[in-house]
Length: 247
Picture 1: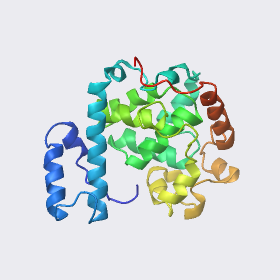
Picture 2 (picture 1 turned 45 degrees about the vertical axis):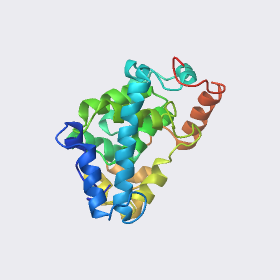
Picture 3 (picture 1 turned 135 degrees about the vertical axis):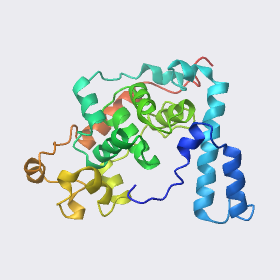
Picture 4 (picture 1 turned 90 degrees about the vertical axis):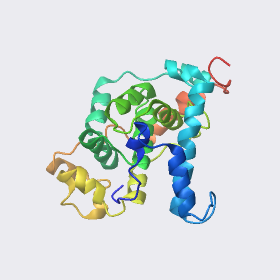
């Protein structure tokens, strides 16, 4: 997320100023006609275009997802938590997890967020905090400059393990591990959490209690291991999946 490594075309796609066909043709022309081989960046970008179109087809084939329903019907029984203070902390970038908070502050300030961070923040809300993914879906759609219903809904249901081809319910990102992997030098954190910018790079991912207190940065709103156990218990209580809603 600290790198300027995306095409930045998503707002233009969302507004219909360019089409996915134009993007695909341009990628093919640059990649000698290859879709699955050749330049790694171009093939990855084509995969993202395909995901976008896949979610467009999902909302046509399964219109119940347009009516605030989970694609996987059995997940409608998840015991979501109603926690106003936790919700506010997430929306304002005050969860105590630097990568999550930096991403949420970027979203509120710019209307954009790197795809990796969309996955991390969405999974944090739905699994660490066990707050209904639909609240986050609505919040993102309100703030994103590239927000469009199908991709946003599909992404949120993927992260919450309620959608089609969703991430397995037992896969729960550790925000600190994700931070160390995708922002190893803590540059993105330093940019959006200036209160942590003076810390050594490796300590920005998970400051000590003393470092947090000195910089008025909150302690983690929930402990990762405990949150993971709570989410797993909630999903295990659902029983086996029963297919799409209404199917």
